[in-house]
Amino acid sequence: MPGASSLLRRAFGVTVAVLALSALTSCSTGGDEATTSVFAVDVGDCLNDAGTDGEVDHVPVVDCDEAHDSEVYYEFDATGDMFPSDDDMAAQADEGCSTAFEDFVGVPYGESEYRYASYTPLLASWYEDGGKTISCVIFDPDGQTTGSLRGAGR
Image 1: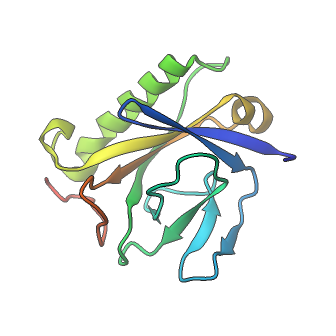
Image 2 (image 1 turned 120 degrees about the horizontal axis):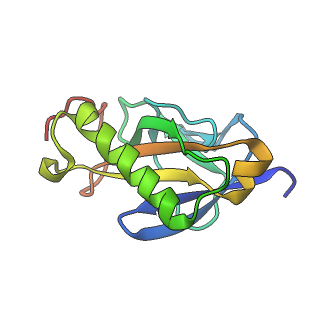
């Protein structure tokens, strides 16, 4: 695939490779959901990305007023000129996502019923596209939610 870049989704010690095209366009899935390149998701986007293990290039984006699996609550760039090790990348993602979690939800991560995961850049996106963005997503481990979890306080 020309211009293909990769992301890594890390959720609590379970790592799933996610392949992402560098195209930043949305396309219809034929249903009510539109899919968007994983590089084009923004803070505030709600996703139906449960079960997107393996290789994917787009994630389904829905209105947050509809039932959804996760919400992008924070984004930041990984640090360093050279691509970090998997452990360092995971540590950067965990530090950034956990720090922003309390500000977003209103309670510390350990006191919340919600969990987070992250999309992090891999080697191809780091050097080919300059993609260093780490996207943090919040989700309810019990299933879908409706509305934003901002300020949910639990």
